[in-house]
Image (cartoon, rainbow, N blue to C red; front, top):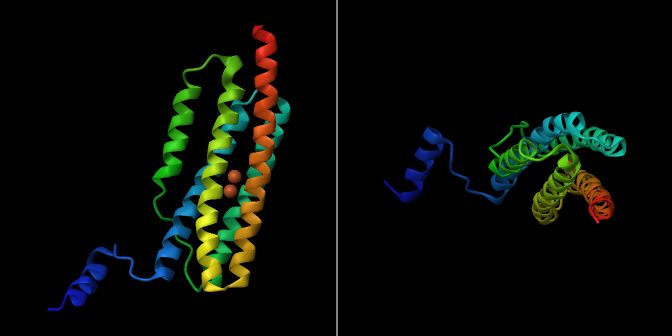
Length: 179
Ligand SMILES: [Fe+2]
Ligand SMILES: [Fe+2]
């Protein structure tokens, strides 16, 4: 039996062998789908925890955008003739867990700082994921797919900027209060 046939058997039995760049792209797309769906839940929870009304509004607005990210990713699957299917995304689970643990430990006045730090870290991660997908989409030369992914990354970048500005403002306020 050749090495290749052995591999084929493995695909059928375990379904865990990724052999082409297209398959790899679809797998990463599935991880991105899980990432966005997880973020939808996180944003819902954070709106209930946030103190500052403008932070709550921004979280709500990004939750709405995130619903669009999920839709866009589903459209990418469809454009490729694939069924939308989530893949494990331990990276986002880790970010979620770290944020949860910290929120359980900090005093109330620090909650918004923890939320903003979590948003900044999450948006950086999302941007990295979309950077990787866009590189591959450009290689495949599918304009619709590129446009959908660009729509997502642009909203992540705008959210990151807004969160950094809010975190800077909050840090200044905290310094004044403790001075
Ligand atoms: Fe997103
Ligand atoms: Fe985001």
